Length: 102
Image (cartoon, rainbow, N blue to C red; front, side, top):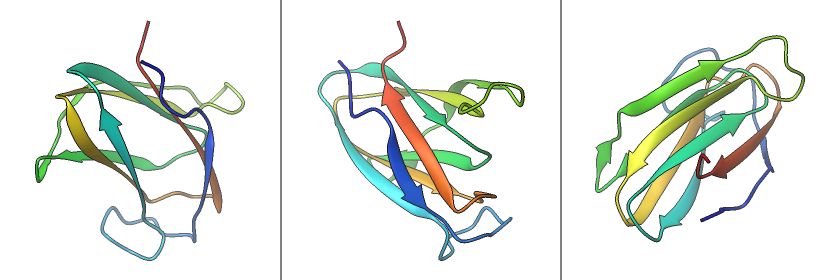
């Protein structure tokens, strides 16, 4: 399963991890139980909500020396809708990729 690749999100500066004008959400439908990897181009918090509950990350990797990729976070999700939440971005534009790891 491959979901939409890079999407641009606009942010205003906010260093706090709380709902704020700079926070953005994206909805995805997970067709079957799967692990999804969410990758962002710059620093930001990544959270996933499914069935009204926050999903704990299954793994995180971060790189400051790779242009265009700052961090990837994996989440184990069940089939159905999920909400991706992004906050605390330090730059006004954030690219996001969502895919199943190979």
